[in-house]
Image (cartoon, rainbow over all chains, first blue to last red; front, side, top):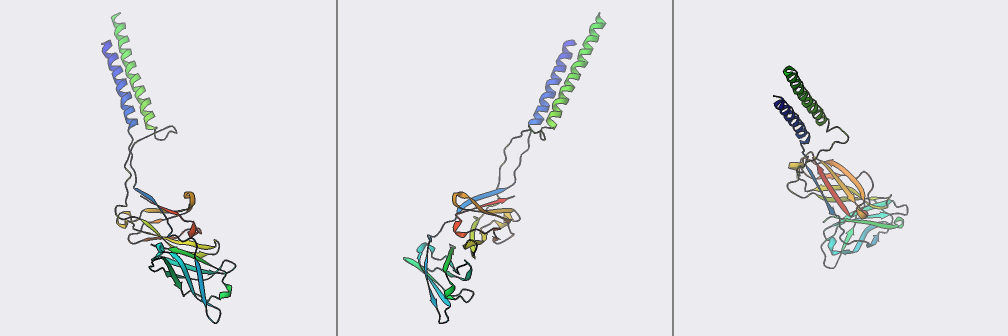
Length: 130
Length: 139
């Protein structure tokens, strides 16, 4: 009887300990959905461009001609801003760069405002698309 | 003498049962507070699924002249190719990166029910400085 009591007591102790430890080790884990990725934003090869302008008899810019555009830019959109000495845009326009074999060119004829040629200090450009 | 032995045996039985209950209570109490203790540690594995089942999110850009650069800035980022059916209403983050993967701007939004998502950077980001884009859809 004495041995039985000791054995029973020990068995209950061990069972209780393992049962509690097993409960502690149980961990439910879930996860919400997550999607992520990165991509390079590449250039079609434009680092610098040169442009010429046409001026009417009033001294206003009527047209800007941009040449020497890499063929990889074919189909992209060229944006050009006419900028004064204070880095303010006097007018800007866009043109689609057409298909070409060696180098491409684009002509912009609308700038959203009348731009006096004398006030234009520089051109600023960007090529987007494709 | 026999009575004394029997009494001692009963006391031992009671002591053993009390000891068992005490240990069980202590360990069970410890287990119940495991998740909030500072030293608590739980581990497991779960699959991180993606709502983007079809299509490839692609960043496209519009530009606008900014005299503070001076030059062209990224006016908007238009994300095309979103899986609107499965990702509708999910939070989306778009980060424009530059040289050395520097974070130039992070824009957040919500995937629309249909069509593309147009995001506007909160700061002026020079278009010439952008060399990469990262997109994450959460939820």
